[in-house]
Amino acid sequence: MFACIYCPEPVEESSLADFAYSFSPVVEETTPNVVVIDIEGCELLFGSAYKLAKEIASRAKNSEGFKKRVNVALASNPDAAIHAATHLQGITFIAAGEEQTCLGEFPLSVLNHSLVNIEEKRADEIVETLGLWGIHNFGAFAVLPVNGVSERLGQEGLQLQQLAAGKTQRHLKIKQPEPVFTNSIELEHPLAELEPLSFIYARLLNQLCATLNSYALAANELLVHMKLEDQTVYERSLTLPYPMRDPKVFLKLLLLNTEMHPPQSAVVAVTIECEPVKPRVLQSGLFIPLAPAPDKLELTLARLAKLVGEENIGSPSLIDTHRPDSFSMKRFTLQTKDVRKRRKKSKDPQPAICKPSSVMGFRVFRPPLRAVVQVERGWPTQISAWGKQRSVYGKVVRLAGPWRTAGDWWRNDRWARDEWDVAIETKPAKQSSKQTLYRIYRELNNGAWFVEGNYD
Image 1 (cartoon, one colour):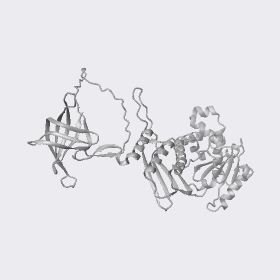
Image 2 (cartoon, rainbow, N blue to C red):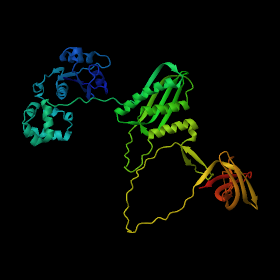
Image 3 (cartoon, rainbow, N blue to C red):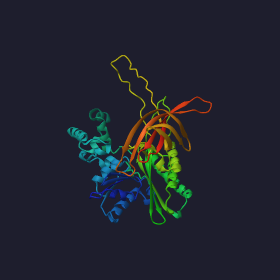
Image 4 (cartoon, rainbow, N blue to C red):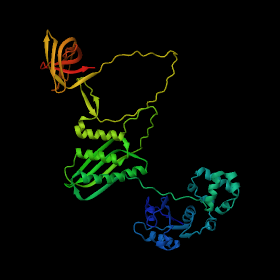
């Protein structure tokens, strides 16, 4: 059984729906002035269905904040209840199978075609055709042969005939509330340790990920707000390189982040919210090696950041300068590319032949090794340098240079130096001589020598 409530007077948006929720949790907001409620089982609370209708009309007229006169119609079909409530005054009760007794005299011009999702133009054409046939009300339309209506008016005509007969079958269109991706909790006692706070994190994250799963979404950013005992607010933002919704991964990342940046006082309230995005779906090829799982990679990076510091982990990025060995560390993100390549058609039947080229790698010493260099007539001849992990010493047998570089003369950390590529010959015990290629340089401001690295 369904009850339709129609308010002929103008009402604010959702005010009629809010009033209907006081009688049933299942409410369809058809228009701002029309709502339909499922009253199945409400008789136990309000008595018979007719008593419920009288209670609705009485409360609407006398309740504070609403005080509107409404029409109420009861029927076993929601569409029949809508037509009765919008065109009949007061309270109307339609028993099952008696829809035509109440609706039969309604003109076809009031047939609500939007209830069966038919366009207005098509509905007007059908009503005009029925008028040419001499059909002007619901009752006359409902008794027409079904086969004839289907042949001449199509499926739209059949749907309108079912609507006029009060025999449509559908579920109420329940208005879904807007999803909320925020969870909060106020603590009875302040928490000053990480272990009890982890249980609070786990509870909030489980609820948050359950909401994401229900909407088939993921999160690429977590925001944590904590109210502290000293009335200050502690905030942390956790940006994820890959949309995820695993509460265990989120918990580990938040604990590592909180351990690196602990709040200054005990926590009395915690709020966690996320930025919902569509999950990322990837399909790997059969012959492509699997890349590291993004969640495991992010956990590994978080653990490394805790050990060596956030500023010392990431992906190196060149700086727009000519200063030697200048780079910055940026956040590492996993880039996924489509490895499938389209074959290009070539007019030349002969395949192109690529000649191999030799490429040397350069291994940089950080920090560079301070060296003692013997110089004859401006040319380095002997080098000795020692460090904690390596040492360089020997005679220079070949060299190239110098190349002078300088820059940032207007700053305190300006640089100016001469660079050389040298081949050093070493003679290990009981072995033949060996040559290694190094890059050395001399600071022009103080004359100090350094070994910058070696070539592989």
